[in-house]
Length: 89
Image (cartoon, rainbow, N blue to C red; front, side, top):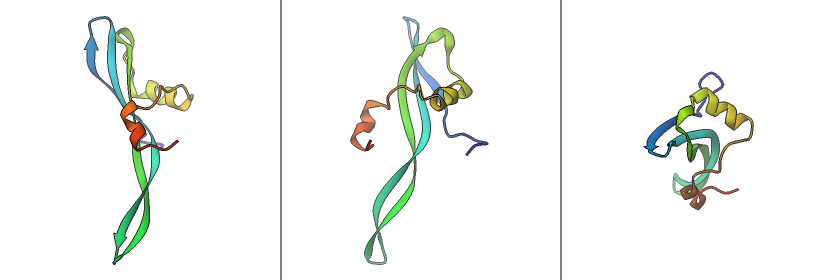
């Protein structure tokens, strides 16, 4: 993962007031699921992308590297609101 970071950013919409809507993946979170295996239930663990939606100034669209630096510095915006239903703090 260090050679190919999962954290990527893309601008998906432009606001005429000078902002862009950014969609981004962040660090990989652990996910746990109960799954049936040979007639019994087991706990499985895997990885899932974190997801962000935020606006950013049009004149400074983020690159993937800049986004990764924001994440690593602890300055990331809150996770996308719709992820609250399945992300535990």
